[in-house]
Image (cartoon, rainbow, N blue to C red; front, side, top):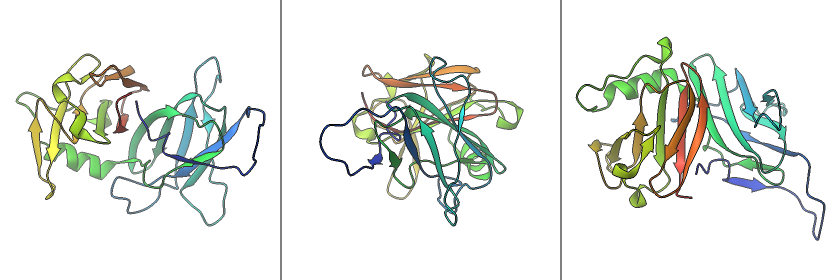
Length: 226
């Protein structure tokens, strides 16, 4: 289960019984990368909903003057969705989750774009297993990059991405990554995935699914067991 779309602050001051809403506003700050050096303001942000709910993606907007990087969309409540970020300087970035049941916003820092320079440097710095050479995103490769919210209750040996074991790492207080194949971990990756459905099985009966196209980075961040 991916919880970034559950990390929200629901709005509303009405008290007592009320009819369930047919649509909600949902959004928040999107940053230009995981270092949070700036906001993502130049590009597009879209929400893709199930085909039986909406035929076309719903475009988010930056509705507030002076608040560049704050994106907002009107969506059906409590509905599975995928959020796509696309713009210069970032690889197309795919998140997944659910819309809230009431107007809300995700916490600042939860959603960010896959900054090209950062991702390329990260991939080059990884201690990868022998024979693993990630394809170039510029050539259409699809990579998944994730982190559990609390890796202490995860087991790398149990996790699968499209049926295959990911590459997992622990990260110490000094930021040093150590590759592990079992037990707790802090980061994990799956490389060169086929276009279409990407399924993460956490090994405990839960998981998440994305639909990815060539050249996209799938974000499996803030994961918790269902």
